Amino acid sequence: MELLASILNTFTSLGATVVLPFIMFFLGLIFRLGFSKSFKSALTIGIGFIGINLIIGYFWGAVSPVAIAFSEMTGNRLTMLDIGWPAAAAVAWGSIAAPIIVIGALVVNFIMIKLKWTKTLNVDIWNFWGPMLYGQIVIVHTKSLIAGILTAIIILVILNLLADRTQKHMYEYYQVPGVTIPHLFSQSAGIVAYPVNYLLDRIPGINSINWTPQNIKQKLGVFGEPMSIGLILGAAMAIIAGFDYRGILTTSLGLAGSMVLLPKMVAILMEGLVPFANGVSGYMTEKLDGHEVYVGMDSAIILGDPANLVTAVLLIPITILIALILPGNKALPMADLPALVYMTVIGVGITKGNVFRSVIIGIPIVIALLWTATYLGPEITTLAGEVGFDVPEGAVTITSIATGSSWIGVAVQKIMDIIGGIF
Image (cartoon, rainbow, N blue to C red; front, side, top):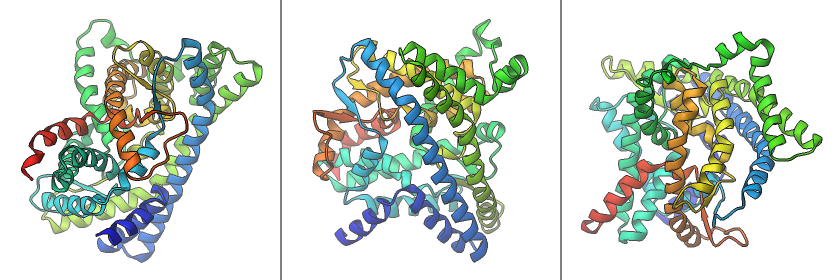
């Protein structure tokens, strides 16, 4: 088992941009898409993810100085350092339970599809790390490997079911065929998005406000283009942060570039994903007597939507402000601020791109993720020490606000902590 864990850890340490194309290629062969089609789709998907990661990094480079300035201006009193979800993923994949969870989750997924309990074939194996992290916490609390493995698999089952339920709304807005989103960040946020959107529908005045990129463009012309919105938002935040003209220009152009480039990178990914998803879905539908099957993917495939990007950018200063005034919060949002784009996709989808409503929906999501990130701080710090992760110098407690969005995982983990002793 240790050898298998070592091989799997080495493979996953290469990151999603390497892991995912390999997985997609072999799945293409398994589902008889043919060598050429499988190879081209897998390589195109990998290139698309590389482009998305590059632009997300560029986006973070543009907004991080603003985020730091906002934090310093408001007087930082927060003690938990947000080191970002990649570090949390490295901790999760460092567990000896990781290979068992991957195999067990895939077997359970196939059984659920065969029994027609789900339509989602979750191939987003890289993002199994989220459920794995909660499984590790249960192992630490209960000293039971079986309880930890079951925790991760139960969370993945819940994500498949939620992905089924949200597929219609995601397709109606984002128009990505044959795909669902069993992503822990996004589906956890979606649990909040639906009831808040329901309430907003019933508030006179609020329910009539509809700020979509299309509406804004019609009213403002060239200034309503995504690149112009990014330019204006970037300049405004830089001015508030007290930047000089160099900082203002760098931030505004950086955001403008992100607004244009990220959708183009997503478009490249879609060139590979759509034929793959259609091929796998068609094959599975034929083999299962007409039972419709969707390919479960990372929400990265839809985060480049202009409304989603604008919503995430607007939530960055809001998140920092909430962190500083929220009772009980100890997490300082920093490295994971760009990950807000993953947490807004369902809210944007169900509001059909209404930025005004999506930002309002984002506020309770931010409150919940900050409280959860505060709870997770000691847990992540303990796990990081056990797998040999280097905690940044000067940081007593580390956390991840992106991981903090995953209250589905926390709920299952708490239940398994109680009953884990029977395993």
